[in-house]
Amino acid sequence: MSKQTTSTGSKKGSHLFALPNGTKLLEYEIEELLGHGGFGITYRAMDTLLRETVAIKEFLPNELAVRTNDSTVHPKSDGDAQDFEAGLKAFLEEARSYRLKLVTA
Image 1: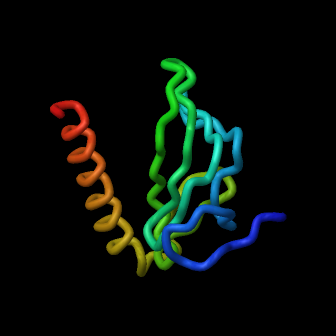
Image 2: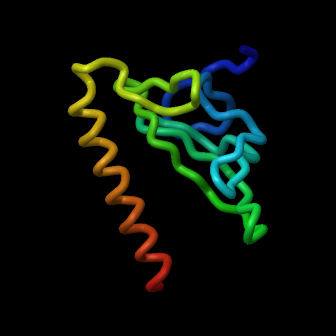
């Protein structure tokens, strides 16, 4: 692979496990890596149905998870599964909270 990791923290640049530009996730198409940190990767993407730019945050905690060949994210080991699930639950709760703030604002 030609991508290289950069230091941890929210940095723009390359990331070994980032989805490549052009990857399609339902109606979204990844356009650019915006940043990454200990718990995930943030991308700029295009909503191809609404033709709007959106940000997508991917839950991919460095210490607990790995992306498999089919592009899904899983715990690195059975021993990491409980912490992975707890982190994913918190990640989704934060996303729901943020979405509610956007809709009600």
